[in-house]
Image 1 (cartoon, one colour):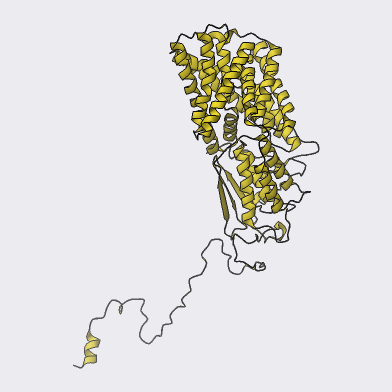
Image 2 (image 1 turned 90 degrees about the vertical axis):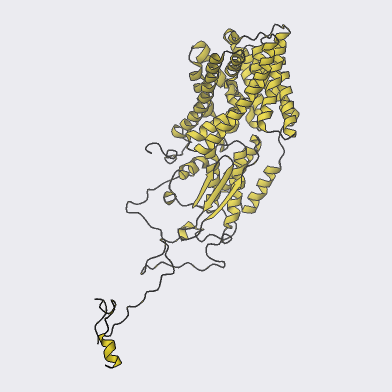
Length: 552
């Protein structure tokens, strides 16, 4: 048998018997092999869709150092429109930029109206990284100055939008600022961030930054990037309007005025002022040595408490409780507490939690400093009576004058502009008058009275800020000084020092309730002014709720 015949009789393999193998005599044509598409992104354009091409730019597409391709919104390529359409949003130019930016921040990116006028110096527009850097530097000064997260967010968005970057998303936390800009869905986003490492209360600088943001966002004022950088550098270089020794004297006056509010006389005024000034100087010394703020508050709380305990041990016929309460007024972090609650009410929960945690640390430092002195005072025979607060005389004239002096001193400590001191002083006097009329004359709960008075403070402050296109902090922060729960905090600590823990916790809970009433009242007053009180001739767009209101 020949070899070919032997090969034909060999058993065939599985491939030879496969149903997919073509029979003999049929020439099979291999199917064309499709090449793997070079782009598999879901943003790739489908075949057959003709999209007008934009002229090529000098640098590579999507480069962070090239001008944005969609710099002018009217020249942007056609975007996808959902079947339901995009709701029309009208933002009147007469409304404050804060209201317009807050309205837009609470919209999805696709529903935001395009900018009408773009601030720029050249036809091609500024480079994206420089705009983002300027925005972050402005946001850093605002956040470091104590501004709320929502207001910082609105200011950053206003700056970006004024320079043509309308598809940007700012993000504000307690110590980190970030912003992202994406020219279109097919372009790479550009993201920048900045860390806030140091904080300092200077409302004069804060007002200057707000004025810069107002000028940048004004349609009738054209400010280039170079001019904005120059003004920002001048703001950072400006010295504080009040020196350190002026702040120390203001601290003493604040403590003395607070002692008069709780029933003190001239001797109590002087003792509280001296104790607060000593505590302030010790705090400055600790700050110069690099100690954290926790220890600064602990040290600053000791001299006023020691002054009150020493007067009691020396059998001087004064109200030592008023001396210690006045010293606590100068240390209570009222603005940080209000800002933390405000951030939580507006949906910035991470920033709110961080601010409230900072307030808790400050309170713990004050508690430790006062408790150490009270324990020594009780051991040495100091007769400190927790019931002394119930015997305070009602002196409306003196208390109103003391509340206004306290507000003026607080305004100096906040480094406010001199033009705002008179307004905030009157605001503080009105707040204490409302509280006194409701609590002493009307015998209403102190928590409810404090909430109503703080609501009026927030309402008046927000009105002033809206008419002046400025921040509301210089008109509200110092005005809440007379409402701070200094006496409730002191008597709670005194009860704990005398081993009456239950009564101490009840008093501290009352202090916490008063603090929450101040914060919620101020925020509610601000919201009422935005919702129901319009500027003359302006009909602002509807403002969406913060983040979410229902559902999970």
